[in-house]
Image 1 (cartoon, rainbow, N blue to C red):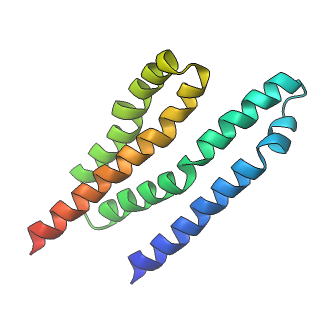
Image 2: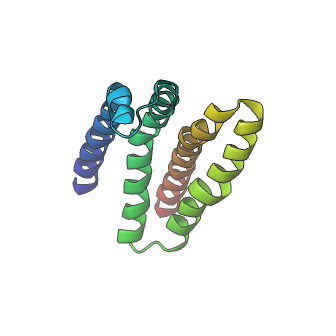
Image 3: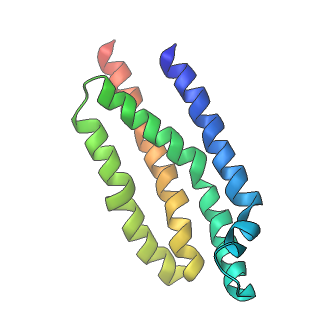
Length: 130
């Protein structure tokens, strides 16, 4: 029950982050930068990055649940995979394929892959229990 409640709060907070960054991209960018072209780029990048907010929140929660329940290897691998093994290579690949936007797009894509990996680990652990 605690995990379900935490999951619900995590999703709500992640969606709040998505809404804040997506709909506030221009004013937020403008508060740091005064150049119109740069604000347009920053707003575009924030909107792309905002997609990662709910995914990232859920990934963090799942990894923390693994840690809290005494799992050691799964959270280590999942954390490293998300940021080290996936995010950086995807930034390099997407920047070559798509350009500047690809660098930012790498984060939501790595979060999606990370969430899929978390789901696989959860299914595997549940089956192992049975």
